[in-house]
Length: 209
Ligand SMILES: O=C(O)CCC(=O)C(=O)O
Ligand SMILES: [Fe+2]
Image 1 (cartoon, rainbow, N blue to C red):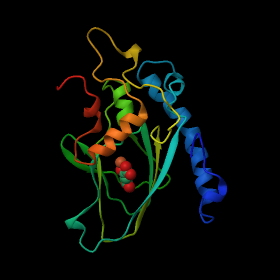
Image 2 (tube, rainbow, N blue to C red):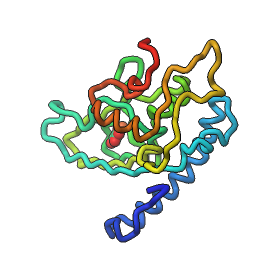
Image 3 (cartoon, rainbow, N blue to C red):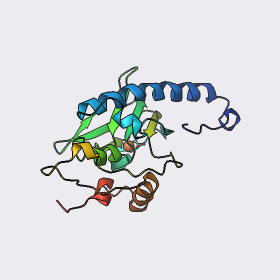
């Protein structure tokens, strides 16, 4: 949806207004959020925005039909998101879980609430000061379940910048843990690896710790 949004006639009539409005609102929210994330890293509030983190967004919609035997399958297997961050709106059904201290913890749906996941690219840029969250989706007998998810960074194909650990965060005692990559190369590597439960940040690790 950004920086090159589809022409209005390329979107289905039933959702074109809401999709356009949603994209506009999350881009504006992302501006504030990347400011706060920059400050949390001890950087100036414009730092992540100047690196293009808030410029490109892809919006995906997931549809999980009601499942007659939910205990036999998953809606989404364990993974981390490749993006800088992902912003998720979930309906009232639930099923999203995050891995915290080796336990799966429910992320209960919150009316009007957004779930924000740190993605792989921000983990790499922060040199592990932020960690991209492992998550999965359980299926329910109830439903269907619908989620809207905005991935910042990954569909921005005209962005040829190299992303790696931010220089200002590095020192002799905190050397870079990752090599630099373009978004395109990183996403291509992640798609090739597939959702096998290994975080995609491993693709860029400089050491095997
Ligand atoms: O639908 C959800 O709750 C999460 C989906 C998800 O993790 C993804 O699309 O990457
Ligand atoms: Fe995800």
